[in-house]
Amino acid sequence: MSRINKIYVTNEDMEKADFEQQKQNLIEEQMEMDLDDEDKKKGKQMDGWGSWAGEGISKSRTQILNEQRRREKKINELKSKRKDGKKSNVIINESRDKKFTKYMVSELPHPYKSAGQFEQLMKTPVGKEWNTIASYKRLIQPDLVLKAGKIIKPLKFRKDISLKAVEALVQNRKDPNRPAAKF
Image (cartoon, rainbow, N blue to C red; front, side, top):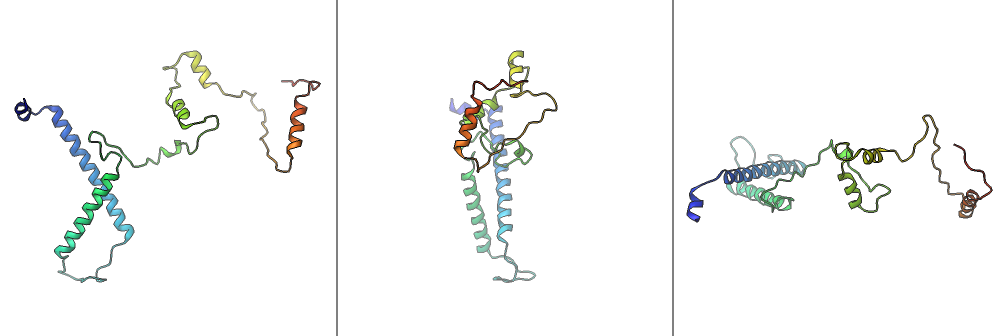
């Protein structure tokens, strides 16, 4: 059976080999760009400072070999740090999309206790196509409904009010003799 498998190559095998080659090329391109950026940040030495310079002067074999070894070592180090380094059938794009960052949440919103709760809510679709009409209306209904043009005064926190004064204000609200609010 193993001889037959060696003789015949299927489309799946070819696709897998193409994918692995594509992934390898992509990784090498990214690594080269990272190394080039790193070299620019470090700043290369100018010719003539610490080495011979001029027309006809080429790098020695040891310099070329040392540079190749350093580059290969860096590439292997960067490959091992990648998230998809050990996964042969996946390519993970680690670059950040600047257009998408404006939709990212920097901190957990108020009513949620954990990131899991928030992620679960974000994963559920809200559209009419995925929910019943009643649940869709409930999902898109605003928390607070006011008449158009109503002025909402912002909350104010003042440090000079003591805790006892705040408690007295709360007690006045709970007073049964107080007239009911009119809307």
